[in-house]
Image (cartoon, rainbow, N blue to C red; front, side, top):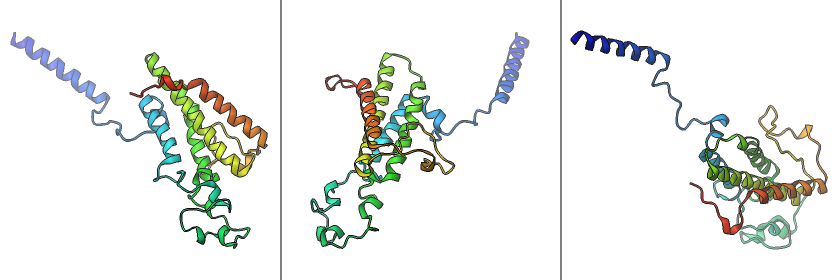
Length: 220
């Protein structure tokens, strides 16, 4: 009996050692270490990424926020509530090189480089979200809703750029240059009408994926 027990323990120890050699139990991925591949394996992480895209529009901590200055206050149409008598267009000292709101984060929600950065984030989401695994109907609806929201965010970004610059460089895939940014020199700028059509198509895609107002979907 004792020999049998000793033999069983020895066998167990050998198997444990061999198994341990195959994978170090301490060799684990850091919980806060995410990359594109790992994010699109988990719906919760995709939701966090969608949240980041929303943050880029409205949170005071980010450069794309819609502050209390109205767009009309970037012209002589209205007066800003912040030191209005000191603004260049109010006192009549405007020059061709003066960019002010359009070269800072004051109206970052329509500054070219800021908005295209957020569009690139949304393009990455749209390019990968269909491959995120789902286990049931509820998770599929959840994924569709996030995809619809991504289309809406991109439509909003292009709409803000359109009213500022007219026809735009339309990018719908996460293609980036060597600098990590869109290479605007290699993409033809679209006409005003083409840009409007692109935005409307994104709106239609969002509508087809998002639930009606009385069918709100709660995230887990």
